[in-house]
Image (cartoon, rainbow, N blue to C red):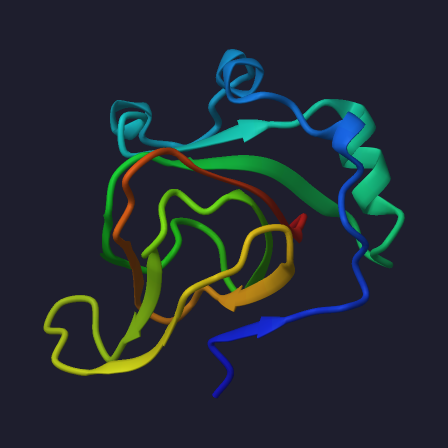
Length: 148
């Protein structure tokens, strides 16, 4: 089973298409639990960034900014299945780790863990229980997933 994989078919995102944290936070937060915005939020991106990244996929995609402000508990992504491509703009700290677990409700074993590098495209199998630990400052990324 693949939990995480770096991908090389996506180019670095040009700096002129990347918004500042302050700008990102002014966009619409589309995460269905707005009360969790102090921990996790998912923001719409400007059309220019959406269009740029759409060019690299042969199916419709949703592009979002993702901000993680605190450690995330073990979870599977809400309302999303399959894989999600991420491009980390700020790792959130020196020792931030993504861990994949054997269970959400009764986790006993770490199946895989990775310290994800900044400015590298990768994908995560988001159907598997995972968490993010070691967050010291906002972890900012661009995410791409299939639009369904």
